[in-house]
Amino acid sequence: MVERTLCLIKPDAVEKRSTGAILARIEEAGLKIIACRMRRLSKEDAGRFYIVHRERPFYGELTEFMSSGPIVSCVLEGEGAIGKWRDLMGATDPAKAPEKSIRRDFGTNVERNATHGSDAQETARWEIGFFFAEQELLSE
Ligand code: UDP
Ligand code: MG
Image 1 (cartoon, rainbow, N blue to C red):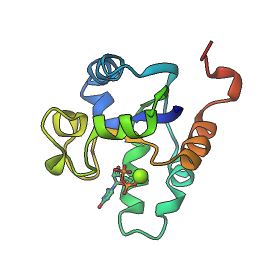
Image 2: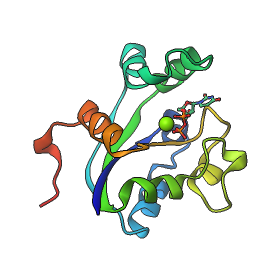
Image 3: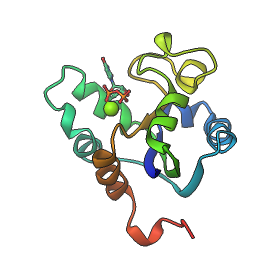
């Protein structure tokens, strides 16, 4: 099934100038970028985006980090895009992500892990809507 998923390149990876390399891996994997822009989130924006984690001990630091610098938000489209993008990223903790995965190659630690990907169709729809209006998705 053709799916859409949200990809974020987090402040750590943008800062390290890994944006181009990460986008290249996405395209090489056969996923299509149908929307893409840079944005700086406020701490409140980051708090709303990660609202499902509000009770977790890392929530405060995570929202601080996610608003610490510019991010790149993209919508990816393709066959099984949600799982494919999560496979490309690897585990949340870069130390546990497989060799040649994006988080292993570009992440620093469990918080500063270079990228975000939606985890299911329902969350993908909500997360895409958080960053983009329907008419900005250039799927042809
Ligand atoms: N995170 C963190 N500490 C943890 C777990 C997660 O700082 O112990 C951060 C990390 O940036 C992660 C984000 O919170 O990407 C969302 O966590 P989630 O469990 O949803 O992981 P993901 O879906 O991003 O792999
Ligand atoms: Mg998640």
